[in-house]
Image (cartoon, rainbow, N blue to C red; front, side, top):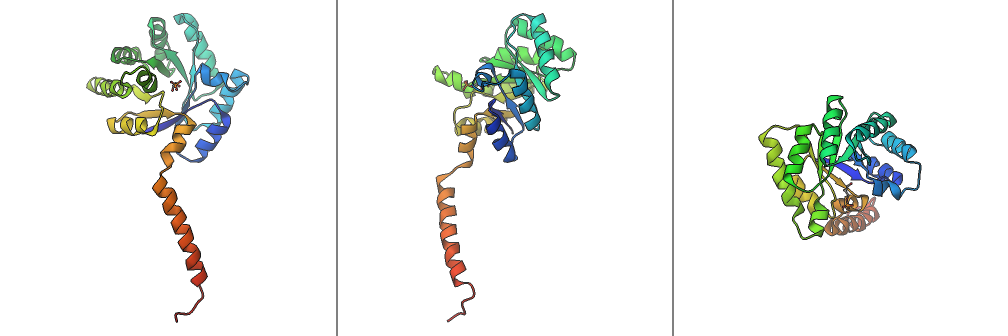
Length: 221
Ligand code: G3P
């Protein structure tokens, strides 16, 4: 499964990329608003740091304007993927952009038919928001479980980005379902690495290694 970082923070991106396990980044207007930096400069800096696709959201609401905005985003860097919320105008724009070879990530997906229509329009990625569904007492991962066989049934090449991830079990379940990608905030990524027994085990090995060092060079009595 590919792992994307869901942030526009350059420090977090630099750190996570250095771990060697980041395949891409997803941003949105909310994440960009936290960075207090010129938008184009920010996206350019992100794209230079990331060895893979960087999703950049369109905020226009009519298809022709969405298409223009998407093309402007794509001029920033080669690895830009345009993020477009699922809606009728978004589908029209996606179809047009697909015909021009521009990769689209259809975002704010909350139902299987939305994902199906996005795939039919030519989206490269769909982003079901699992956490936001869980937040309203719905089952976010059940949506992913429905989308994957739908795409498999018809051999859509559209990849599923499990988004709005809140905790490690979202990632585990998504991986077990065979989701192509999970995009997660830096805090959730850190949690994937940690296990208390690993920390305890490392501590004990380091303590015991001190004893080994002390006995080095000593002859057996
Ligand atoms: O990038 C889109 C998505 O992951 C946002 O997550 O936490 O705002 O629901 P969240």
